[in-house]
Structures are given as C-alpha cells and as structure tokens.
Image (cartoon, rainbow, N blue to C red; front, side, top):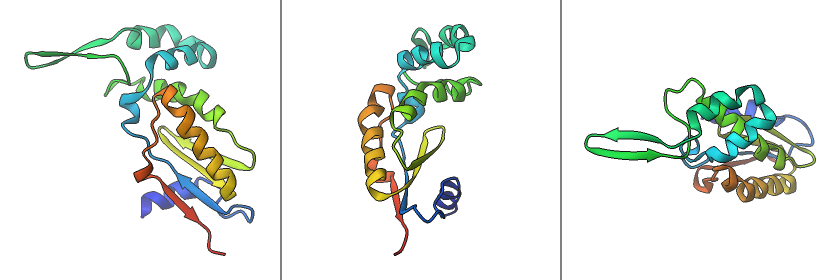
Length: 151
C-alpha cells in the first residue's frame, strides 16, 4: 500500500481535472533494455557519455556460470554504476513518444506513472505498450494498477 501511495503522490492526482492514475510495471525492464537503441539514443541525449557507454555495452559480454558461458547482449549489468543512467537514456525516447495531451507522466527508472482523464490514460497506456518493445520495455498488464477517483 505504501508503494502505491508514494507513486501516486508524484502525480497530479489531487487536481480537479484528474480522473485517475495508472502505475505501470515492466517485465524484467533492466534485463530487457534494447542496448542498440539505448546507445543510439545516447548520441542525441547525452553525447558526452556515448563513448563510455559504448565501451561498456557496445558488444555482448561473456558471463561465466561454472562451466557454462552465457552471452549478455541486452539489458544493463548489475552493480554497474552507469546502469541507471544507461537505462534512463535508453527509454527517454519512449517517454517522449508516449506524451499525451492533458496527461502528466512521472517516471522513475522503469516505473511509469500517468495521471489525467481516463480517455487520455488509455491512449497513454496504449502508446507505451505499442512503442515500448522497440526499446525493450514490455508492459506487464497483470502488475499494472489503475486508480480511479470516486465520483
């Protein structure tokens, strides 16, 4: 319950014109991030970091699990200090594409929240669900929450 309350406080839920709030959840967001798209985005949103991020994420990395070698080609790397920045840069264009009139978006990492009219919220949700996979953002509908104001 406290988790929902903190996320709702970041929106304009108390405004008279607000009819509801959507709290999104993404499936394995940091693991599914499209690295190629994130590196492309970094050239436009944060060019000073592009070389650094390319050195870290430009090629698949080998992960060793006993005798098994796995290739890590998508997502961010745990304990990487740049992971949060890389993830944010990676989905920034998604956030821009999801902009919807009269809807306020508030994001923290993979937690997307929106407040506004119900029709606008549906439009926003559909945009995120439609464009998201290009960025490695897969909405997990079973964990999303819609909170509607009482009449």
